[in-house]
Length: 118
Image (tube, rainbow, N blue to C red; front, side):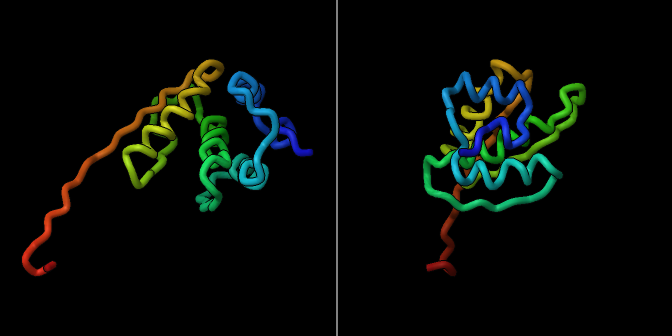
């Protein structure tokens, strides 16, 4: 059985994972975390709701942040405000062991229907 330790996560992330009550990585986490820790890259991972996708990209993103830099070091785009807030809340749950600043911003856009669209 694969463990979070074997994926290459830092002791701080492992402590946060323990505090969150996670016991073993999901399939999507097993497959993505080592790749995202190896080098910065874009990735698309498809998995059902509740399989740990946020942690799969979030833990490596947080681990690779330079805490001495004040610059933006990560950007996550989501299609809805609700998902934006869910991601922010989940990633902020690691703050017990890692001093990060995770901010969510969302914009509501009203789509107007014109006569040509009808």
